[in-house]
Amino acid sequence: MDIVVPVGGLIQGAIDAAHQKGGGRVVLEPGVHRSGSIVMRSFVELHVPAGAKIQGGSKPEDYHDFEAPDYPGHAPEKSRKCFISAAHAENIAITGTGEINGAGRDFYDTNVPEGAFFVKPPHPRPRMIQFFNCRNVRFEGTSFVDSPGWTFWLIGCNDVFVHRVRVHGCQQMINNDGIDIDGCRRVTISDSFFRTGDDCLILRAIPQSPDHKPICEEVVVTNCVLDSWCQGIRVGCPSDDTIRNCTFSNLVISGRGNGINVDNPKRYLMPNCNGRLDLNNILFSNIVIESKNTPIRIFVEEGVKLRHLGGLTFSHIRIKAQKPCLVQGSSETCIDGLRFTDVQCDHQFEISNAKSIIMQQVGADNA
Image (cartoon, rainbow, N blue to C red; front, side, top):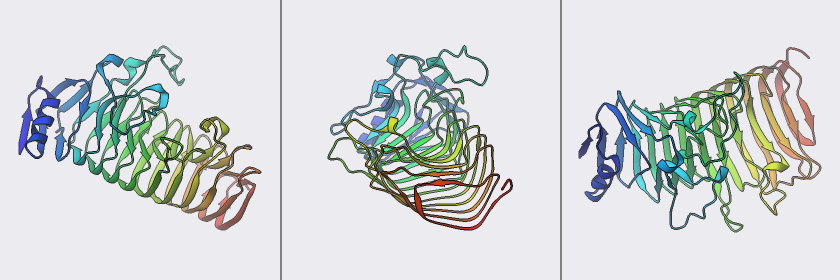
């Protein structure tokens, strides 16, 4: 059953009505639909067709805080505000080739030199999409434009399908990540485009409490283009729990930031923690990286002790970058088990505090 929402109609009311009738599709008419926070419900598809735009508000008070009965409230940047959210929902979707716009620039003082990041504002900024403990989730065809915070934060979700989406973030904004996949299972991202000031694609397993042990696994990313001023791909942070069994393939990564970053500095540690991450069995293949920084960076700062960092495979990689690839463990964490096959780059690798490194057909033009 389709419920058609005219311009000026209530999107939330239509979603609630479809849910109460057992599910259905909410279809927006072409035009600009201005909206505050929206909550998705089970068995409802929000369809934003070509010519339709959901336009978010330009002030923090236009948005609600994210709430769920078992959500502990941890949120980056001290903001729980969210544009489109869902909690414990199933069979939900956002589809159509229209646009969802978060009015991100309106939250910043944009009077900075060209090429500089905007200064973080003191007031909270909303994330565009925040789904918590949902399953059977689909995003297909839609453009997500100008998010004030993380564009997607998917927490503890299973069976997520992202196809042919476009994420357009202002590259002078900090914290407008593309998709943060946090403690999720069975996620597929394909045939999509990401342009962000912060990281494009991120794998995380953020503990929401000392006893919480999230696992991020079975994530497949393929046939995507990534353009970032920060990281094209980030995998893990030192206080995360377990990230394993994921693949990245057929990607083009460009921008002035790093290409692939497995970064574990002390500044990312949670209180009373000197490291927790267990990272294993991640494959990167058929990737082109053009970076003005470090193309592949696997780093553990002194003072950080991880449970394990290894089992990473890089194959058929072509690199043009201003800096060399870096593999640097710490005295507390020896990086264990990396394989590089058919990797062509501009500089020799820099490697320390690492073992069981296999290199086959690895060439450096400036060696």
